[in-house]
Length: 64
Image (cartoon, rainbow, N blue to C red; front, top):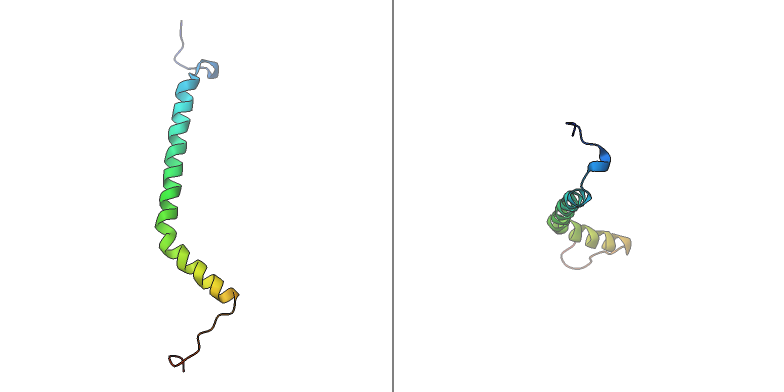
C-alpha cells in the first residue's frame, strides 16, 4: 500500500534528469539572450577601454 508522501528512493531518475535538463536549457537560453542583448553596450565599452589603456588622443583641426 502506498502512502500519499513519496520517498526519495522512489523518485524516477529519468524524469528528474529531464526536468533538470529543461531547467538548465532555460537558464542557458536566458544567459545567451542577455549576452546578445548586451553586445551593443559591451563592444563600445571594450573599444573605449582599449583606447584609454593606450592613451589614445585625437589631434587635428576638429579639436580646439
